[in-house]
Amino acid sequence: MRDLLGDEAARRRAFDTAFIEVVGAAGYEQIVPPILEDIGVFSRIGEATDVVSKEMYDFVDRGGRHVALRPEQTASVCRAFVEHRPALPYKAWYSGPNFRYEKPQRGRQRQFDQVGIEVLGPEDPHVDVEVIAIGWDFLASLGLTDVELVLNSLGDPEDRRRFTEAVGDHLRAHLAKLSEQSRETLERNPLRVLDSKRSEDAPIIAAAPRIEDFWSTEAAEHFSEVRSGLDRIGVPWRADGGLVRGLDYYRRTTFEFRSGALDSAQNALGGGGRYDGLVEDLGGPATPGIGFAIGVERTLIACDSESAFPGPAGGVEVFVVDTTGGSEALALSTELRRGGRTVDRGFGGRSMKAQMKAADRSGAQLALIIGDDELASGTVTARFLRGDRPQEQWARTEANRLVAEALADHRPPEMTES
Ligand code: HAM
Image (cartoon, rainbow, N blue to C red; front, side, top):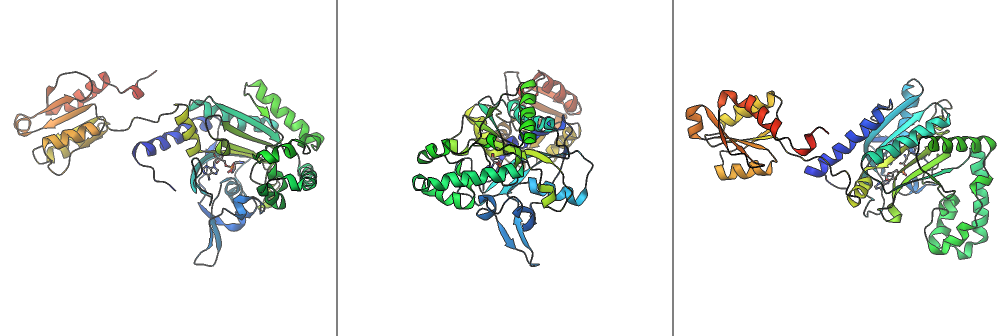
């Protein structure tokens, strides 16, 4: 679990802003589910998954309720849907922390942020296409280019059940050659073995039954429409029958956005899929659903490797330096802020030198200095901290207008209209 300060926190906030722009343009509304839920909400994700069986932060609260910190938000969104029944189709986006007791490493924390969307209601394959395209376009909007979309369909529940059984039989027939980890995974969740990256498992996985041989006609048709929809709007994809994902609720379409800039163990920037049975499992009416979540920290690591999305330049526009006791700084900074400027100031009656150092650190374009002479003559000294404009003496009463003029001439690059 990490702290985010200064530039990192500003970049995190800008990440949300970029996401909101993309999802807002497609008619998604925000949902803010609680971070803590009844344990029953998350058991639906799948008792056989690591996320539920090994990684959940769960405990009994003071009222004797068994609760957990959410490991993801799809189940919470479905629980909220069952409780509030918003009109269908229900298109929601979210952003916030999740908790999994994993082994921390680069791109894997115990508290991590996700941004995501969920669509409840339509079974239409165009919804799958819309959801996938939003994820794709969002990552592109950050400036990422080394991203691959991997697609699969797990078929309908009966297809998935027969496939799981066939994979289990195949793996058990080659038990002795499987890695120890995969033998263990096989006991709990045979499909997850298909995700193994270990070299000793590779030939056995390559010879395993293939999901496409188990698709029902309807599931195959649905998946074909998803692929042609993506082609129609120019979103490139690669089909991979081994993409099973780590959560049990998936049916039909599953997908992952992978980054070529990350280690293969943590290369999924985000992923998602259909979970047509989940709302029903949580006590609601049969309601199809699909969505994705993108891991914020991991995506920012990929951005670093691709020199993309540097985040906003922080700081204020103006810094007020007052060596006459501070009450002039109080008045002037308040006046400028009320006029719409971003302003910081020195505190505690510090020396001119110390306050000018703070002004420089603040990122301000302009320092407004009030010393004894300025106070006596009703002026301020305007010192331009970037560029070579010489300092000027302004009438105190004109400060608001002159600041606006000076800043219009000296806009920082990120505020320049393109
Ligand atoms: P997930 O694949 O478990 O899916 O997580 C989505 C993304 O969250 C991952 O691709 C990764 O970027 C990030 N993530 C997961 N665990 C960690 C971790 N320990 N540290 C850092 N990042 C992590 C879900 O959570 C589903 N709810 C997605 C979904 C939405 N499916 C349908 N709708």
